[in-house]
Image 1 (cartoon, helix red, strand yellow):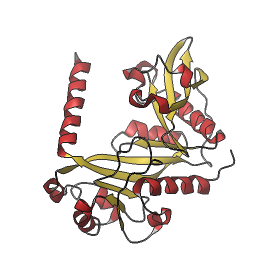
Image 2 (image 1 turned 90 degrees about the vertical axis):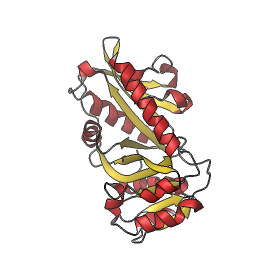
Image 3 (image 1 turned 180 degrees about the vertical axis):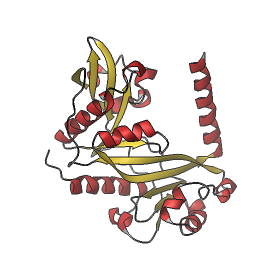
Image 4 (image 1 turned 60 degrees about the horizontal axis):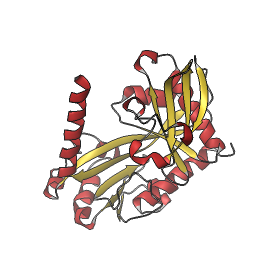
Length: 266
């Protein structure tokens, strides 16, 4: 593990610059930056480029990667409020986006490991290191945060917790881009609150760093359980993103989520 905290941050900045189509130092400026989004094969695999409206902040300013169609609206918006207020209500209800057929859709906070805090923690169950050959039977709803069925080819490494032969917790990481792997975690409901999630997350982060890749972790602001796990596992908040998508896309996503919730109630 030869990377330093500075190296880890620099890696994330470089990747964000690839995703947004800007320079990595743009995220460290005091002023906001607007760039026109373009396709890039080196961007994180799950991103759909080019963006109509995508905003990123590492805390200093906002870099907005947009279509020419949205440049004026987004520029007015990000220069009307403080950086942190652009990522929260009521400010983010940008009525003018609706004129362009867009709505705010995705909002997330991203975490990077702090090497001063990252360490392997005890797990009350046996843990096993897994690779993609072990995942074929695990693409089910209960492991849907750790693994992604839509992008199976990216799931590359995992750590499982076992009660005998029963898998009770799984942390998996996907090779979302060349330099960074994203970690997701699932624990069966009856096995939660025993430290399994943080034990698996921290070990997988260390295993990822051993392979000279930077692990990162994503959570919604409102997902308190996930944020707490990130912090317990040695991760710290690093940047935030907010993305607008077409109104049709948002309504379709809401419909799919509603149908899934109704199915789970049956």
